[in-house]
Image (cartoon, rainbow, N blue to C red; front, side):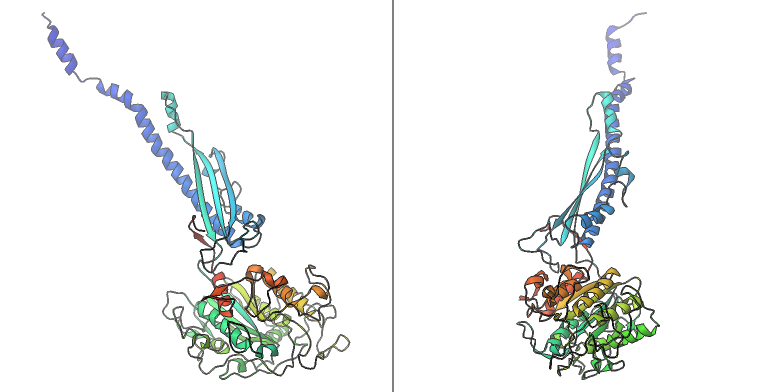
Length: 541
């Protein structure tokens, strides 16, 4: 046999058998690397989405806790509760040991945001450690790789873990609103018949107060916003109402005469002088009276002008100048229709204040009646809100002769306490604070709007506040009382005619159309606060 050397060489070079083995050996590390990278990046992406979702949830929870507790505990606790940190609501297994290389960790930073309207203003200069209107939450976690780390067997150095970082920022206000059950409490004592005197409102103080109530009603939602009409009204309410509003007043009124507040034109109801309530000494302020009891019915009937209603607007889409429906809604008529907007009043002048100077200010009963009513009549899915407008100078004197309606030795006809516990002849300011404290403990959000508040007031208070923070009568003023009525300082407002000093200096300052602390601006701010916390861009300032 003859072998040809050239032919063998040519065949060897042309023969492709076995090349796949070589290429496979070369490509195996790359295949592992690509497959491992896809799997590990996919796992890291899932972990990141979990981390971001829980970070946003934590930011919203923290924003809902503002402005209370911003020194760290309450806000940080709220954020941590909804975070991925081990042991909390959203502690995904992927983000904690043993699955995670380094388990989820959280940092919470209170912020003062100035570029978003309708947020409570921070002090100037801003001090985030002691006040905030927004919060930023950052969570970090390290998750292991599983496949690309195996490249080490081929001598390829690869990462052992991915470090993930998610950030969420939320403002305390500005998101969706409602549903709410709102009780507006308006002072109609004789001083409210005086000229307002504020730089930003003309007319009487009661007229200016009613303008604020009109703004509140014009921005609340009687039904869902996507409905062009709220539909048929039955017993003052539409089907499935969103925000219901009731109207209360003080001093107490004779049952049945409240219709004068929303008749057109309005006249003054028959007033009940203090003692203006029935005996409730057997019931702690935190006890809910039975809605069918005589105590409940008599109490509410003496202070309530209009029950919870959602007929104040025909839909959530009504526009200026005729937001409200005074010809068909008692509460719209009671606040004077659309007088603030220059629209229809339906011939209604709204609630009136007597000018005979026969009664002093004592609003504990109205607060107690409003809270009892909200507790009994409110919807379980709705948040209860109380909006109080007063000069804060609770007293038991006449404004004319200066003589008392009653004395401890001559209590009159009511069954009253003699120790300053509502209902009592003593300490009217502290009684109001005690009633508001009980309302707040029941979950009611309390807003206070001070009208013509000065540094004096509360002359009949001679003992401590219920929380013991103020001593004798020298430290008890209208300002301190109103401040203590509110849920916190973010819910405390004063109009432009009020004195801003001492406790009054803690009130929120708001502006609208270039004017500061008008009642219009204040009630607009309140509606803004009734919105929910919402996420905002992380780079906002």
